[in-house]
Amino acid sequence: MPVIAVSNPKGGAGKSTTTLLLATYLAQSGASVCVLDADPNQPIIDWKLNGDSKTSLSVIGGVKESNLMEILDAQNDQFVFIDLEGTASVLVSRSIAMSDFVIIPVQASAVDVRQAGKAIRAVRDEEKVAQRSNLTRKIPFRVLMTRTPAPGAPVSSVQRQLEAELIAAGVPRFRTSLAERLAFKAIFVERLTLSELGEHKVGNLEAAYQNIHDLVEELVETLHAIERERYPNE
Image 1 (cartoon, rainbow, N blue to C red):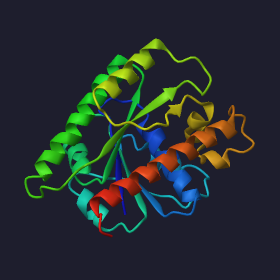
Image 2: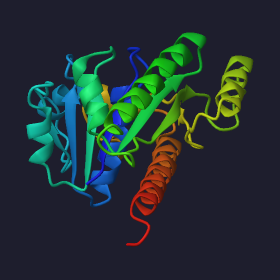
Image 3: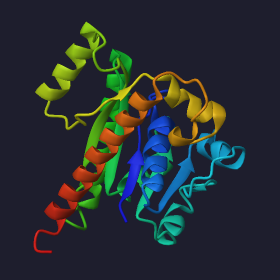
């Protein structure tokens, strides 16, 4: 059961969108998936309770630093996502410390990249703390570029520069980015999964679905690689 935290101290980086898209796609694919909505605004709880989606995805709200461990211990799903608040807090630190993998969404702006740097430092700090009692403990992470131009559309010089800086700094990132698409916004407006939007006019739905398919494949591939590294003899 990999626990996947989605973290960036900057609000509006795409944490909840990333979480919901990945979680609902995996659930639709037949996996058992749970989202812990640790955002004070509870966007995914609102989506689940006030919408008509038929997804098997389960969502738990009211997550605090005092009950996080208890909630995680009670989960037996194949994937558990933690959608974290857009600020530094004890809950964020504890969630990262208890995660098997951290996704750091970031938009192509200097402000977002600086905030992503804080998220990366938070992951590395929690890893160092954990290694005091377990020298082999690692908390792998990947940066996910969000709200990027659709494939074939012009890419800004700012985005190119920021991507080059991430590569030069050796920061691990997803090959797949999350493009700017109407369908990704519509899932919160309509409170449906991407595959349930169907008759709603939300732009190129097929391209949006392919984008998430590619990202999920890369996520699963990454998790398998982490598992093989962690347990090389199994």
